[in-house]
Image 1: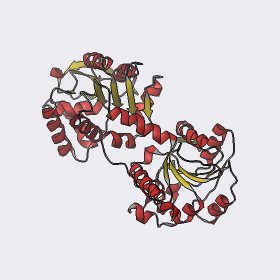
Image 2: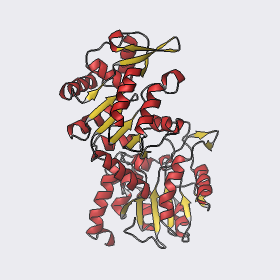
Image 3: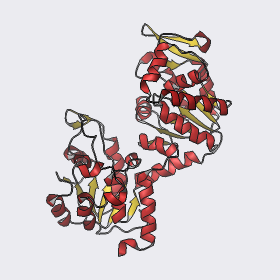
Image 4: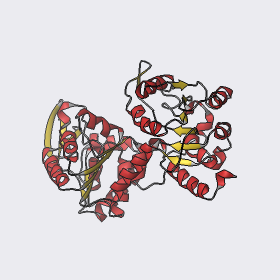
Amino acid sequence: MDDFSFENKTVLVRIDINSPIKDGKIADDTRIKASVETIKDLGDAKIVLLAHQSRPGKKDFTTLEEHSKVMGNILGKNVKYVNDLFGEKTVNAIKNMKKDEILMLENVRFYDDELLKKPAEELAKTDFVKNLSPLADYYINDAFSVSHRSQTSVVAFPEMLPGIVGSGMEKEIKMLGRALNPEHPSIAVLGGAKIDDSIDVMKNMLEKGIVDRVLTTGVVANMFLLANNIDIGKTNTDFIKNSLKEYERILGVSKELSEKYRNKIEFPDDVALKDNEKRKDVPISGLPSEKPIFDIGKTTINNYTGLIKNAKTIVLNGPAGVFEEQNFDLGTKKIFNAVSSENIFSVVGGGDTLRAMNKYGLKAKHMSTGGGACINFLAGRKMPGIEALKKSKIKYEEGYYNK
């Protein structure tokens, strides 16, 4: 954004303000607050906001009227909501804008044009893009958390307008990029229940020498116990099988990684079972058990926190156990506390991870709002939203948009 002047220009800005909704009101305005930095950096430009709320079929799939009010309160100025996306009402509203005005258009996912599965060049021919792009001078993507999706508002506008990285998106790319080019010792702490995502991150980071060690917690740890031929009991095995579409394939990848990186992947020495609502720590030699595993054990917690304290860089994704239950939040609390040390460059991501950090009042050096996008970035996957901006930069330098 520093490379452009937005004085009296019309700018389309894709933001992510997808928020929890309760009784028709926004229950958490974290994402709306996060998008404000880019809007302020645009000074007195004419700002047209593109955003989504939830997805078709969900209870919280609703208009952006309430979002515009909340954003207006945060900014201390009027954010005009238009209950239309690319029709006559929107076109006239944009044409009549004065500098320093902000419009918030309707939820982009209300319209089929947003969710078409086509290449960006084809999406650029939709009415959505054809109607809006002639009215704007620039397009800014400040929605890192949807940039792993090839959706019209994310990838098509840079085909028609110079595409620019927003302030929030730039920070995400820089911080996550630093985690992928770390100061050593570097550790990834991977937990939670999304095993397939964690394994993709682990594989990328180990193969490229990004991390020196991976500490597994949560259901991810249970998968690696299985991969190391430790019987964790039918209850726990069935839970994993039911949560994975490709159980056999992912078990196979876990076994391969365990074999190849035997000295780099740590799994628990003990676990905490839920026994009649009580916590029961048992060593791995005490398995199998039909009681569910709800946390890593106390010995493992001590071992892991010791390793974390000596690290320079930490990537953390996923809680260590069922932290929502008081008897089983010990692993999550202790490990997250260690990761939050002032001396460590720590990057944390994922919805449950951020929820736990907030619950304990902890801060990392970078707390990614990306969710799936954060995982995709750390797993080394190409991100359509970022690729669209790279392509736009080349087009801009070649004078394409001046034709």
